[in-house]
Length: 477
Image (cartoon, rainbow, N blue to C red; front, side):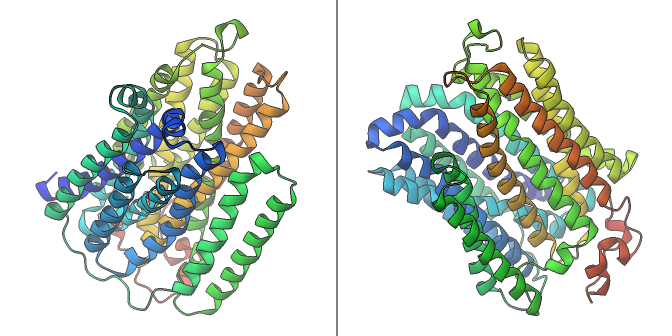
């Protein structure tokens, strides 16, 4: 890889890894934050909710901006804004300022669709596919690494250093990007649909708020139902407007094509299926050994058990491009979905010893990384250049929404099977099996995506009708 190619991929990947790792360190550090800032449990929840809502709002908007303007300037601006949010959180004198800082920090998720467009514009197809793989793999590795580092760093230096170290890492990534990432030409004419962005952002915010608040308010509470109803109405109005204007924020007709629809569905299902690991597995690992199914693990050991998932995802992601050329892209998409299903099924059947846990999370990590990387690659190949980043943004938002919904459902499954407030082994098994079933549905979504790009029809009905340049055959994987 050339020096410039190394920097184009390395700088944003480093930034994504730093921010993802920092977010994962916060959960184990919540008791320290609560004690230092005298925060209530409800306020602590908003540390994550605020970041989640801002990322859901910003990601599709950044994706569209990346389709239209110089991606280098947008990359540097996003790095600066997110880093400023982390610094504000590090210096926060109270929990309100910390919540605001994390909300500002949450816009970093827009980096994910931005990098898809950046790699496509500046790298050869094979290197772009490798870059997409590294984004997914490093994000998974950083998540697991954050869980391991949280305890030692906060114990030795204090929780504020979780933020300050992230600021330092983000600054290094920003300087690297300033030096290595070239300017890109404007890919699309037109204007930014700010009204559409406001409606989409508002609808997603209402939906995410309803999902995250349902655990405390209840799914049938009047407030929860009102939030969901408002989200449906707002998103419905947004869809009507987007279909009527000539230059929408998200081209819904294009999104209905086989590739965008299939990859978006896979994103939702992968996010949904991951709740088996995000919610249930750490809880089961922490259960006392006397229960017969817990391992009595503390926060550090939970991170160690989860770490192989990140390692597996990081190792396999850059190999997705060669695998696609060897096996075909549909085969690779199906393989990723099958492994997601298999990993969670393994945890349902075998979870009594450390090696069984490691085997299950490793298979899950392989599947998630293969499936998401292959999905991003087919989006970059099939979707017109002036919409690739925007569609990728929709995929990441879909995965985030699916994960949030899945986490709440997972908590409900565990609570329903609890005895005396303690989850039973049956509850954990049911949670893993439900995750496996969702992974199986992702296999079906993979079959929606065309096996190869043969003509405009494979790009979806809307793409065939649009007067946009076709992707050259040499750009296919």
